[in-house]
Image (cartoon, rainbow, N blue to C red):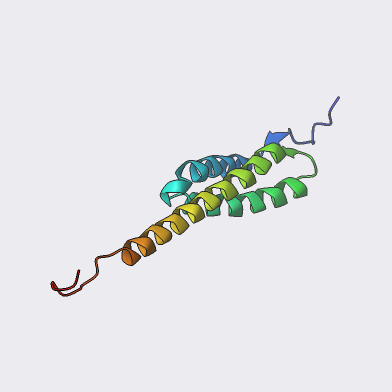
Length: 106
């Protein structure tokens, strides 16, 4: 039997929010819009981990935090790949441009 003063075990809401933002960041990372939710997810995950550790076992959400980190970093990596691809394509477009030779040159 539990003591009446013991708090109920509750899920950490910051962990849930970090997980949702991590999913959003991974889903929109390739479109460069995933950087913002992924970064916010990492910040919230750090805060949630501190809250869970300070909660002395009365808060849950470790699994959500693990997935929030994975998904947020996936979103950041996808955004980095998209930016790199965009830069490479733009550089190659400039390198393949037309040459201005006089009309008498074959």
